[in-house]
Image 1: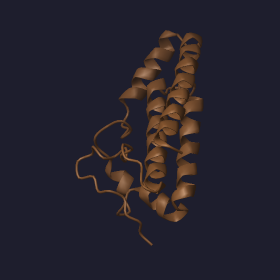
Image 2: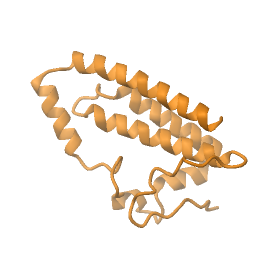
Image 3: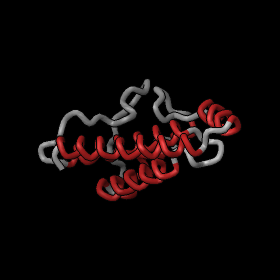
Image 4: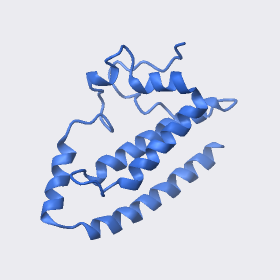
Length: 145
């Protein structure tokens, strides 16, 4: 995929999510639902934040990097796309979870898939950084065998 095609696909998905969010929000507007969403948004999550909890690298490397090692790049992209789809499909529907949390997780997985896909192109397509690049102490991915 070219950089323009990747960006067009991302925009198309975001439009679909925004419309789904509007529908879900209208269907789930209750005081109890709003309180549950606030509680869920306050929970510890590294998605969209500039840190990674220690549990993400409890075995010496971040689990996401270990998954990429095991699957290889192309299967890893499919893994990320599948996780992004899972989070986008359930955004705002899971009891006690804020729409924004699942939306951010879906975006994170899309960005990781775009990052790996862009790196596989010859020549690599610039402008698709690892979504973890802003974290203090971030170390770019290198394959372990």
